[in-house]
Amino acid sequence: MKKTFTLFLMLLAIVQLAIAQTHKCRQPSVIQNRIAGLPGYEAAIAKTFDTARNNSFQKANSRSKQVFTVPVVVHVVYNTGVQNISDELIHSQIDVLNKDFQRLNSDAGDARALFQEVAGNAEIQFVLADTNPEGNPTTGITRTETDVETFMDVAISFESIFSATDSCGVDLADPATLSCIMEQILGGALEDGAEENGSLPMDNVKSSAKGGKDPWNTERYINLWVCNLNMNFQGQEIPAVMGFAYPPTEAPYWPEGAIPTNIKAVDGVVVHHEAFGVDNPNAGQVGGLFNRGRTCTHEMGHYFGLRHISGDGDCDSDDGITDTPSEVASQSAGDPANQPSCEELHSLDTCPADDLPDMYENFMSYNPEACQNLFTKEQVGIIRAMLEGPRSGLILQQLTNTHSTELDQALTIFPNPTNGQLNIQLIGYDLKEFDVNIQNIMGQEVLSIPATKAIDMSTLEAGVYLVRLGNDKFSTTRKVSVL
Ligand SMILES: [Zn+2]
Image 1 (spheres, protein in one colour):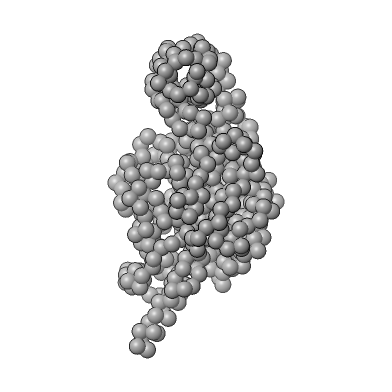
Image 2 (cartoon, rainbow, N blue to C red; image 1 turned 30 degrees about the vertical axis):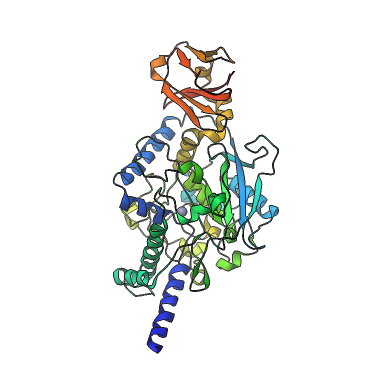
C-alpha cells in the first residue's frame, strides 16, 4: 500500500511538472491529432500556406494599405465570480490586440536590430461589436453563468502517464522529456475526448446546450470565449491550456473531416480567464506568466492562419514562411520557476544552421510574453490574405467599398430589388472567369455558381442578400433585396 501511495505521489509530481512546462496553446496537439488521423491533412496545411503566401506576395504591391476594422464579441462563461472577468479587463485585451496588430505596442522598439527590418504591421483594428446579429445595440460582451467547472474536461489516467513515460523516458530534469510526456498525455486525452465531428472537449464552451454560449455568426464576428480551462487532476486544479483557435479552413482542398464538420459553430478563439487581458488579477495562478494579453494575440495569430514559428518540431519543421528563423520550440518558457530573461534569450539559437538566432520576439513563439513584440512581414502577408480571403466575412462592407474598384465599376447588377431574376453586366472582363456566391444576411451561403448573365434567385426567401462576384484574384460584393 505504501509503495502504491509513493508511486501515486511520484506520478502526480510528473504530471504537475509536465503541465508546469506547458505553454500557451494546444495548437500542436490539435494539429498532430489530425495529421495522425487524416490522410491529406498535412498536405492541406502546406497548400493553405502556399496559397496564402502567393496571395500575399501577388498582392503586396496593389494591396490597399488601409486598416481593416473587425468586430469582436467576447463571451464570458463563468462558474465562479472570479471567472466573471471585468469589462475593464476585456477592454485592456482589445487594446493589446490593436497595438500588437498595428505595431503600436510600446515594446516594439525592443526587437533586436536584425529583426526590426522584418517586423510587419497587420493593420487590423479590433472593436467590440456595437450591433448584435439581430441588429440591436450591444456592448460586444455577453455573460453566461454555467454549472460547468472547467471546459478542459478531459480524463488523464495513470495508464496514459505510464505509457508516456515508457515512450518518452523518465528523466524529468530534461525539458524535452517533460515536453514529450505532456504532449502525449494531453494529446491523448484530447483525442479520447474528441467528438465524431472532430470538435474538441473544450469546444463545449461554444454551445449553450453544453453549458457554454452559442457563437454569434462566426463569419461576421470574431467570437472570443473566456472561460476556465484548468484541468482537474486528482482534485487539483492544473492550468494546462491557455487558449486555442481553429485556423481559417475554407480552402477547397482540405480533406473531408480535416476540421470539425460543425466549424461554423465552433470557429473563434478561446482563452483561459487567467490569461486574458493586461494585469489579470488571477495571472498569478499561472505563475504570473500570462499577464500581458499576449495569449490572445498569439491565438488570434492562429485564427488568421499562422503557425508556431518552430513548426512544432525540430529544425526541419517549419512554419512555411521564410522571414522567421528555424527554431525548436522553447521548452522552458512555460515553467514559472525557470523563466529566462529576454537578455538570456539573446544567445538562444536552437537551429544554428540557418545563421540567425531564434526570434524570441515573435508572437508565434513560446517565449515569455515580456520578450515578444512582433509579427514578421510574411506573417502579416498571411494574416492579410486570410482576412481578405476565408475571413473576408469580417470586413465585407469594407471590401465592397475599397476592394477591386475597377471590377466594381465594371459591374452592373439589376434589377435591385428583384422578384427573382438578377441580371449581371460586366464590361471589360470575361464573365466566365468569375463565380457568383450569394450569402444571406446571417452569413450562410445560399448559392454558389459560375457567373452567368442571368442568375435565378427565385428560390430564395424574401430578404437582403450579399451577392459576391469574384475569383481568386479579386472580387466585389453588392447587397441585393429579393422581394
Ligand atoms: Zn499556439
